[in-house]
Length: 231
Image (cartoon, rainbow, N blue to C red; front, side, top):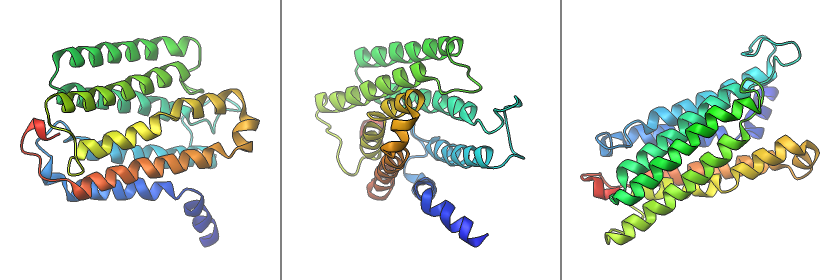
């Protein structure tokens, strides 16, 4: 039993980065609890719970959310819901952090496009059983676009993000992961053999570790946020 537990954590070491990010987010919470990032610890905790639940559904027959013969180990439903929450949260963060009205509107239109794709996608891929490729791809593109607008906005008002800015580190972590996320999903869906041959799941775990390392750095190096302009 101990050997199985050790193997689990060795093969899924990235879960440690979720846990550490959550701990650091709570330790430094007093520095940003009054800002648009105040719900970030909840999101990180939700992410960790989603990942753990995904493993339990996949590996244990007694735990399931899809009651269809032959599909009891499918866990895409919880990740499809997670993606919607995750993307909409960060669209909200960037739209409320950026000062440019034009950029705010662009993010709003991107969010609306993502919502429409999320509504349309289940007509092509069962929401219960399969990842929502169109919605996740559009969500990733809009998120990266929002991050770029954030950097442009901060540069325009001569307040270039620095290493003491929490959202600066979060933005780089998100950009690093979501630049590759759509390709990982598409490859896993359309060519499972190639996905396994190139150990793409391990690559995804590395990307997650890097992203949440950026989060942890942000919580560690950040100064207290006193004004919206400090984000």
